[in-house]
Length: 452
Ligand SMILES: [Zn+2]
Image 1 (cartoon, rainbow, N blue to C red):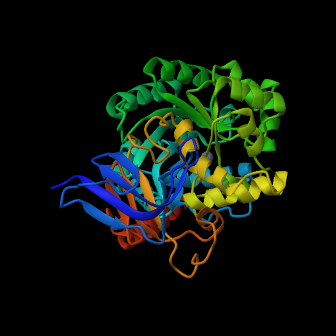
Image 2 (cartoon, protein in one colour; image 1 turned 60 degrees about the vertical axis):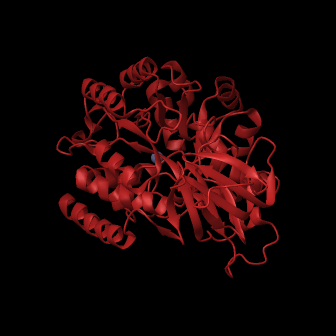
Image 3 (tube, rainbow, N blue to C red; image 1 turned 90 degrees about the vertical axis):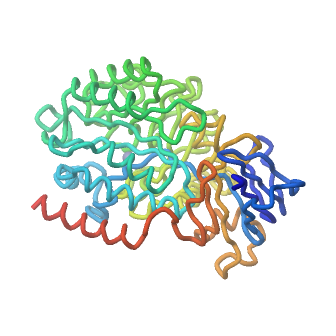
């Protein structure tokens, strides 16, 4: 049987370096890669799978650069609280998570991501209760089941309440435990091949939940192992106050002092950077995962997206965890990125096409995958989404990119990850979404009961 799929008659938004858009074009997939873009190719095997994209827009698959999948089973709590109040409400519930909770939550979160056009996602998992079991393995299993390209991070916390941090004692680990588990995760799962469906990064949680030693040693280990580094940074004014009181500097100055800048580092949020700091991020190619919905949900300030992009900082989009963004839909983040940037910087602060770039090739750059994914070009991985704009929600919208970014999230006619179909007819092909939904509800109830 042919390994080829031909998507025909679609409006193709390539997001290539020239920003080409091809109004009625074809894209040919062979195995895991895109092998032709533009005019319909000549002779093809008779059994090639043909997909009619009439009335649809084809984009690169969207890339999510920040998430906490386990939170899918702890949504809707502390809905009207500040970041620090929200965290202290949720930590005791998160202390009860185990393999079943994490696998169920990840299946829910990944299914929802797939239905919002995501083909590659990271995850920042940093809560490892002593009796929790193999939590990273549980979410990796879920990602393989749903079929998304996955860049989970081995997160960590080692600074609990008794030492001046925010999390309770039961969810933190020692530096030795963390470094051993991190090295094990890289040895077990990290795939350096260009087609890799699975790559690991290291991710101490935030300046207020980890020690300086853990940050320094995690950076050393990540660089020794050749993996990327991720953490939360410059998310809220409370964090600025914390860093000023504890370290006498800003969050970024603190991270710079422990080796946490470089083209192998990306920070979630990055709201509270000043001009000099944005220059230093650009000079070091340190990335930012912009999470507009979560930032607004928690009442934080608005990221300086335009300034970061103009300076040359790699910027991607992130849904952030489901406990601070109950929706977690990737295309919605592109919409919110436009609205937030314009609310801050006026009508020209971010175009709809720039928002699609952030959601695709921008995210690929942040995760170090831009050579292989993030745009529709011959030779790149076949991570693609075909959006159906024929229903009443989108029909007649003049500009297909405006329809995508400013309109409702369209039904997905088809999506492919590594050349494999994951969504068709707006249904996830790899899991039973109704079963996943029922499991998520049951797991939510179990965790709340467990926390008493
Ligand atoms: Zn986060």
